[in-house]
Length: 300
Ligand SMILES: Cc1ncc(COP(=O)(O)O)c(C=O)c1O
Image (cartoon, rainbow, N blue to C red):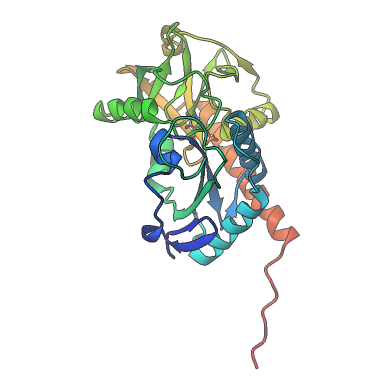
């Protein structure tokens, strides 16, 4: 098992992958990314992540990128790494050109980075059982948080404040006093048996896990409604729930030092996580049926 990178089509140990100091991803954060969870060596929600990546590229006026070729490279890197439980990270930058703010003219080839690394779910599984504390923090991000760009400095500063305060995540509060989301996870909450979350728009990332969890909540007869809430309204919710690609579904038990609901993981978070696990298992079973393991080749 080896952590591998694929840089512009060339697979190598991750330590050997180097990009130029003229890369616009490095200089300006002029790049987009995705993180896929791999279960048993297969990419979960692959089509959905690729659709979001395509949208991010389009919103930032990148030249069309060959995502099929990128995924062929990604699958080859996964196979070469031998990693089964892991994450696939992909990043596309606007390429390498001497530092100047406008897009390079003529355009330069993009930089494509793929990284495959193992992911140990054990620590997160323990958080799912115990629940996590959270703090609130001003949302200092730009006005297009729906684009998954690598401009993550405001997210980094907010989660660092949270971690120094002993919290797992920070809920971000916009300039009008409304809840948006968390620094690297989507936030949902429960009021009177109903699941709620900030409506999709420029203020939040359209989370793949959130979209899946909302589909699952429908099949569990848990109603969902988009809602704009203040921090005080959030604190009065019965449950707070963080959802994201590696986090899956994690209950929040404390916000700014005060308990949420009973101060223990709530029943809806638990039901949603069970449904999430079942969805992954069903998908893996479907894949195994569709593409059974190759028949063993008899050696001579
Ligand atoms: C700001 C933000 N919100 C939500 C999420 C969760 O998105 P997903 O479920 O697609 O991982 C992320 C993940 O990186 C994020 O950075």
